Length: 110
Length: 158
Image (cartoon, rainbow over all chains, first blue to last red; front, side, top):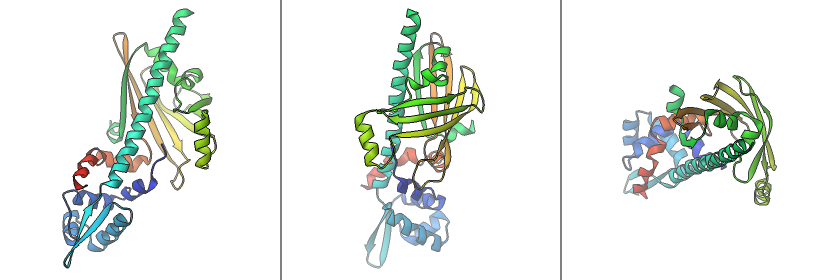
């Protein structure tokens, strides 16, 4: 259950989370992201680059325009980490139930 | 409760048992060791003091050949000491265990909590375990924003 630090670190920043939120509606140009996220252009550009490098975002050129969109992979990774964590606890509580039964049996015998 | 809205993972079970039996599994050495694990590991408890501020110290020890080998491959020792405290406690109904997470490379030391609430319902007990896992604050915040719960919607971009 050792997680991928990169995914968490990338999303630890609230500005990047804001940008990801905005891109969830579909791909956008930088100026649209600036407008919708309410973040200064230089900040958006910097964080978009980090998101690109971390594999959260891709770019689709269309003539002079560049459209930024989300890639599903890191989100799947995050989700699968959460799933694993949940499973670890499901298994743990299965053992809890088994231990409880054992304890009860022992209690009845003595 | 504010701590609950922040917690990302909730597991819930109902057992046919008494509050005392369930409580003992969380708060005694033999009880805790009998189930904690996780899979491939055992817990060796060195201190368990069920009172507010009381210590919970245990070693997580890899105890299957596969796990020992896996830890070796990851460059980790087969045994890891864990330090925690009981930070809230009402006998047989509520406890919070606060863990100090100091073993993740590249991550500053931080705390994660396990909150347990027990409710007697006839001859059964409902146990709700609320977990604030890794990167507590960020994960908690993301969950609060509905971030993680909506992740699957991104699949349409695939």
